[in-house]
Length: 336
Image 1 (cartoon, rainbow, N blue to C red):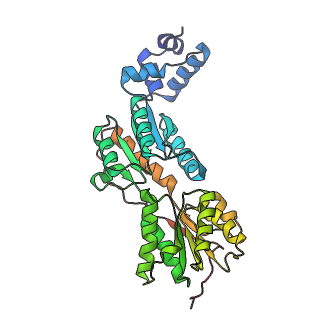
Image 2: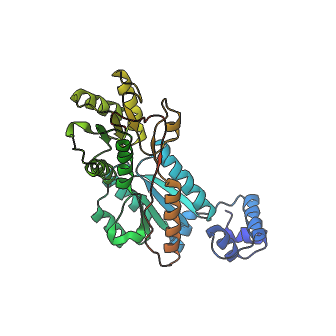
Image 3: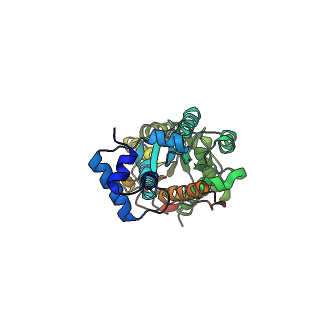
């Protein structure tokens, strides 16, 4: 069985230097690292990272929990996380929270058991008290994405969901729409609640009454958007614009509107959220909200590295969205 000592002899360096190369710690010249990796390759040495993590109480890895693996949104997040963490010399371990608070908690505990140096949790469902308990009790630093914890702002990277939704509906109103329908995401999530609050806030800001029949509760999926839009149409409450709380539901709503004989955007203007890559290629191209997910995961990882190194960290400012205005919105009946 090939050992670390065999690698050190073949590479002409100390066993401690081989250990530093494998763990990504300390200052090691590139030529030395190359010699160590060459020796490993020649000898067929494969380090036992589990044994190393038990001995060092560290796996030289960063854990990442996402709500689920579906869709381009989390694809962007995972690609950026892998790029940044691998560039740091650490390993990325990713697991799925399966869109339930119990599974999100279990995923975090799994990563802690694997002795990850830090854990980044993208959560949709865990309660504020459960998140605070994680921050207080886990032996490794945890960064939270997609939630604002007032008691631990330095551990949070979050997006101004309500303000972004307000901006969408405010824009539609300024374009001459007053009868605006809304399809929410899963309403038991803070994200869906914040986006619905932004919708309501914009209506109130313009002194437009809220009509309950113009609000349906979706599930963030394409079929959910389709069925929610059919429900809106069946209520009989007229609307000249529809705000779908994500792009997938907007896509489903497009089909329901087309089947009902509604022309887009002449009869109904449509606005989504998330700016999925397909949004710009729909017919008509979908107006939506761009989320800076690349910048958000980078901020979370940078903050996690500071915590690993024992550095003090400060609260990060919330991230804001950008309205991507495309062909699916035109001036409404009340345009001046």
